Image (cartoon, rainbow, N blue to C red; front, top):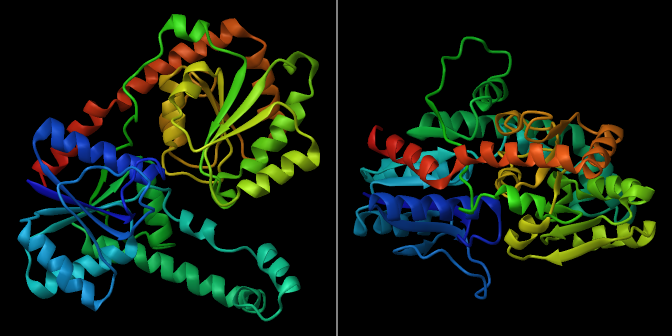
Length: 397
C-alpha cells in the first residue's frame, strides 16, 4: 500500500517527538511490511537538519492553491491512506479535498497528546498582563482586557475541532486507552448521550533497540538526566531546576550531576535561572543524540504539565535510567507502576519529588532493582510490537 504521513513540520527525527515517532513508524511499515511511504508537510526546516528518507515529499499550504497540489500528489502516487499526525486544520483541509474531488483515500488521525491539552498552550492571564505593562498597544496585551471572551472562544473552537475529526477521519488513534474518556468528556462536555467514537489505541514505540543489561546498570554514574524540548509552557523545566537546586545542596548529593539534553526557545530563560540562583553541577548539552547520556545516567526527571505519552520516559526505562514524573497526564500510569519501575509524584509536590530522588540516589541496591524492572517493562514498546499493531489497523480498516 502507498501511505503518506502528514506532519506540520518537515519530518526530521531530531526536532521533536512527533517527528521522531513518525520516522519510526514510517520506517517500520516500509521495512517490515513493504509499504511505500510518502510525506506531506506544511513547514520546511533548515537544510542542515537530517530528514527521514521518504519515497517522495510535498510541502503544501492549507489553502485553495494547495488543494490541487495535494489532490495531484495523492493521485499521481496512488496513495490510499494518509496518516495525519494530529493536525486539526489539515484534517478538515484533507477531508474537503478528497470529498470535492471524489478521491479514494482514507485518513487516520493520530493524537499525540492528552485530549484537551491544547488549552494548556493558551497564553495565560499572568503572561498577558506582563506584556500589557511593557506594551499596552500590542495585540497580546489587548488579550488582557478581552481575556475572558478570548478564552471562551478559543476553548469552544478547540472542542469543535475534536468533533470535526470524529466526522472526518476514518480512524482516531490515541496513545492510551485512558484517553478515550478524556476525549469524550472534553469534546462533548456534559453530554452522556454521545455514542462511543471509533477509537484505536496504539502507544508510541521505542526509539532505540538497546535494552540495558544488569552489568550496564551496575556501571552507571551518579548523574541525573533530562531529555526535553526547551518549552516552558509544556515541559516546565523551571520546576526541574528548582528541584535540583534543593537536592544538589545536600551533603550526600555533592558527587551527583544534572545533565540536560535538548534545546528550544526557552534556553535563555533556563540559563538565567541557573545563573541567578547559582545552581551548581548542571550541564546544558544542547540538541544531541541522547543515547550516550541514557547509557551513563542513573535517574531521569520529567516535570511536564502535560504530555501525550512521554517518549523519553520509555527511552529512559529501556536504558535502566529510573524515571520520575509528576502525575500530570493520564497515560503515565500506562507506562509506570509507582515504586516498581519508576516514580509517579503528585503534581507540584516538590517535597516528595526531592525526597524520592534523594532516597534513590543513596540506595544503589534498590535503584538497581527498579532499573531492571523499568527495562523489562519497556520491552512491550519495542518497535516490532508497535509496528505490528499499526499493520493490523491498516489491514483491517
